[in-house]
Length: 187
Image 1 (cartoon, rainbow, N blue to C red):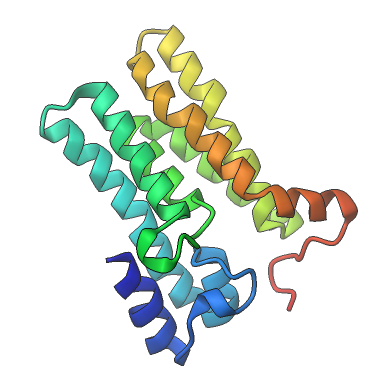
Image 2: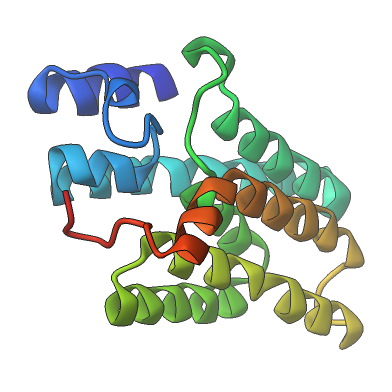
């Protein structure tokens, strides 16, 4: 599915390109947006969001419980970042991470997404909004666990998932610190 979506459907149909050969080299929504515009972004975001959401929802529907849901989401995130069929060169996991988070804790997910969107709008740094928005999911989810509103196993998705996303953004963090990170809309 991912191979068809990114390489064939979005990239090749959009402009006849393999998105991994341009921009950041990522198959993620932001790189696709820079290359193919808003429609490409929306298609990729929905696909990435949906696959994680459906994996976690499906694990729960099949009776795998909270630990199974967390594991299903984490496996999607790992597969998204290092896809076997794309030479282990995928996205950075933000849309997939958010999709999984929405399946587990919808209200905090919405708060994180709005926070990320506000930061992106104010600074035009997609990476900054993505990192801060996803990082906020850890304290929000921990608080829900502490309140007894969600199972502690959900942290088995959130904590390593956020760590993966932040590690995958390490170059962006270096560029942010150096003042050389590209803003949304810059070539």
